[in-house]
Image (cartoon, rainbow, N blue to C red):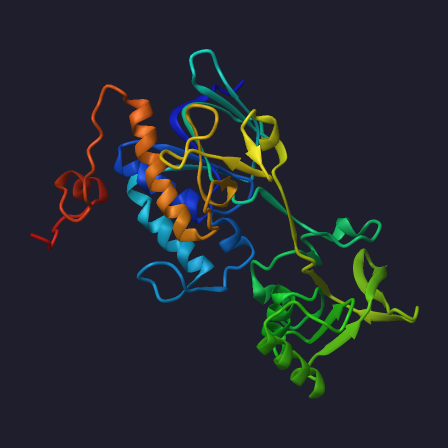
Length: 347
C-alpha cells in the first residue's frame, strides 16, 4: 500500500483563494499539498467561466477567470506546491496526536498538521440532461462545460439553457459552428440584456435559431447522437439534427463529505473565528466562500484577506514557541530570496 503523505499543510480546493493560500503559507515557510476534485487548478473561474471578465481584483482593472488562475499559479511557483487533482477528500478526522488524517476518493492518504478548506460553496455538480442513457455520450458529444471551443467549430450545435453561460456560448459559436440552436423552456432568460438582444438579432437574421421547449428524447445513428427531440408546451415535438450538445442548466453545489467531518456548520457553510479563520476543530481553517461569519461577503478579495490571516494563525499553531514576524515582500531580503527576486529596486 502507498505510504501516507506527511505534511504541515493540506489545502482542499484549488480555486483562486486556495491558490493564494499556498502563497501566504509559503511566505511563512509552510509548504502545502493541494487537493481538488476538478482536473485543473482554478476552481469555478477556470472550469466554468474561463473567459468571463473579473473587475474587482485590486490593481487589476480587468482579467478573465483563466488569466487570474494563470497569474496565481505563476505567483506560487517559488513554493513548489504539490497538486493532487481529480479527487475529492472523502474523509477527514483528527488523530490522538492532533494531526489530521485525510483520505481521497482515489485512496490517497495524508497526515497533516493543518488543513485549509477553500472549497468554495462545495463541490459543484452540473444539473444534467434527464434523458435515459444520455450519460453514455458525456465528454464525447454531450458537454456541461466548454474547455476547448474549437472542438465545436463546423459542427451542428444544440445548446440547452437560459442563463449567461448558454447565451454566451451560443453567441460565441455563431459563425464558427455549422449551425447553432438555442433551446430554453420559456421565452424569458436569466442573462445579460445585451446578450439577449444580440441573440434575438442573430435569430432574426437566420444566423442561429431559438426554440422554446424541453428535451424529451434523442436518436442514435452508428453509435453517435444524431438528433434531439424538443417538445413545446402544446405537446408539439420537433427533431433537431445535432453533432454536439451543450447543456447549461446551472450548477448544484454540494458540501458532500464535509458535513461528516464534525465541523460546526451553519446554512451549509463552515463557522469560523474571524481572528484566525480556524473552524471548531483546532488546526482546521476555512477560507473563501465555504465559511460564514457576521458580515461575510462572498468576494474573491475577501477570500485573499482570509487566507493571509489563516496562514499567520496556522504558523502560530504549528510553532507556538516562536514569535511569528510580519515581513513585507517589498523590503524583506529573506522574502526576496524565497520569491527569487534578484535585484529589488526598492531601497
